[in-house]
Length: 106
Image 1 (spheres, rainbow, N blue to C red):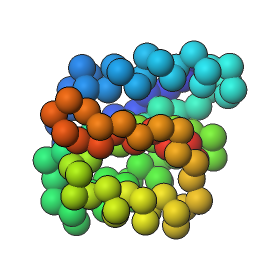
Image 2 (cartoon, rainbow, N blue to C red):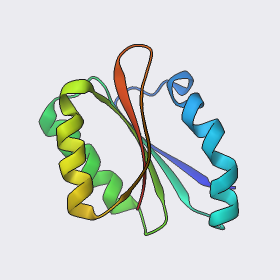
Image 3 (tube, rainbow, N blue to C red):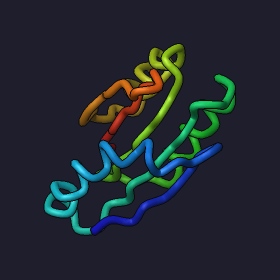
């Protein structure tokens, strides 16, 4: 279906199940083997967040997906980053524990 790549400080699969399970089926139809890059940046500094985003972008190709979990105060940084790389927002959700979960297609 798709190759999952984890770029994260502390990965907890339960957090990502809500978006991933809903989205995996359409992805397998749209693209033969896209990468699904998961970035968990809940507990990192702003500088580290930017480093994780740069690392994710280096590993991604056009058509790949980035699932990104950040603190609410980092939302504007993510929006700025996405506008610079001209990506497509698939969805943005707020988790139960008040983080933002972005699904982005490059």
